[in-house]
Length: 183
Image (cartoon, rainbow, N blue to C red; front, side):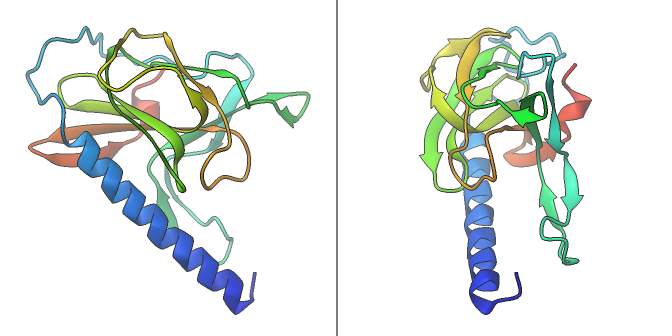
């Protein structure tokens, strides 16, 4: 952890992560805006990993990933499925937290396989590090419908779902705490 090569790699990954987050913000800033009513949105998102043995492995907010006093902002929650203390997330279903239209679907070396869903009224959800995605951009999905499978693509330490909730108001993307929306 103290080698210059390690520190340089961390800085490189942080720059790539920040660039990817800006790219996602630009993509989600498009789509429906406040007042659009072509989606049924009941205001309550469902848990995107439909397993009773799923839990949050990394929360929303600032944290120190390297335990070196350098804090970074995690704009999402990471969800893992465990059985008998073992991460069994890979290949588990991911469902749409709310009905909407798939806004983007793609791959990056940071976020791996990812997709975003536009839920109307400026709300968007992001699902990252998927092993595979089974919906297409432009496709309408129902709340609870399987949209992808959990994986370990992109920059990860193990299989999980990176789940993010955003709201776009006047072209500005606000990253919200998913726990304020999911049940």
